[in-house]
Amino acid sequence: MDSHLHHQSQSQGNRPLKPRKKRLARDQLNLLETSFNANQKLKAEHKTELARQLGVPPEQVAIWYQNRRARHKNDAIEHDYMNIQLELGNVLAENIRLEKQVSMLKFELNKVQQMILFGPTSSAATLPSVSGSSDEQANSSSPGNMICNWGDAGNDDIFPVEELYTCLIGSDTQLWPLN
Image: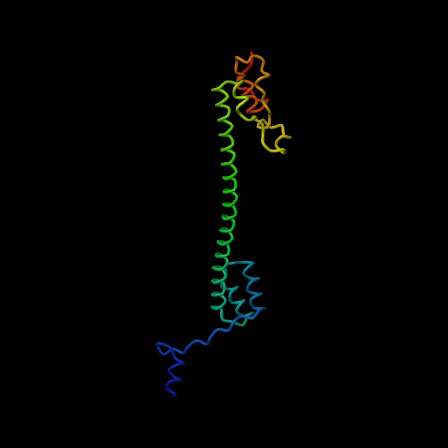
């Protein structure tokens, strides 16, 4: 039995086993965290001083700092990942909004192309109004919400291109100067 105990107390190379390290108490951890938050790099003199204050070997303080830096790096990576995921969600939502807007603009373009092909009198009867669709938009004075009436343009034989353009982009902008 003695040989069995003797064998357990020694490791390879006939060196005695190191005593098992005890877990740090809450106040010891608080001191290490405070020190880490002040400076993430541990200088030799500070390591020795912390080890003396905590009553642990300097190597244990150094290992704790190394582990804490690794944990801090992982937390920063996780935080960055969450921010990227949030930004991705915002970009995807914006992409969906823009796709809907492109679809609506393509529809409006198609209506205008039909007006140009079929003339202003026949298209006014067959196509819906160029104005916006919702009540909230109808109260707005944006160009997309303007109602364009081609029958009031004066001469039904001449297509009112300038008025169509003004209706689509707004009354403040002109495509070419009027004579």
